[in-house]
Length: 65
Image (tube, rainbow, N blue to C red; front, side, top):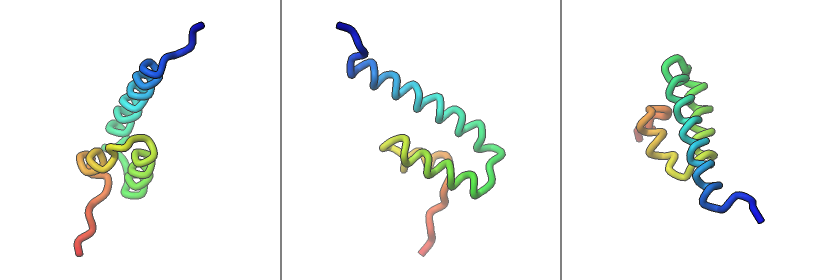
């Protein structure tokens, strides 16, 4: 027996995401526009709620049309 249950895997994923978000917030202060775009791409791969996070962090400005 043994192994990690699905609940524990999800908790581990959430904690890892939280640590990455903290790192993104600290790097955001000095980031250039190209670095911000890279951060936005990484956020999209990392989580499903990426659109709200990207807007909150100001990583991409919406195109005016």
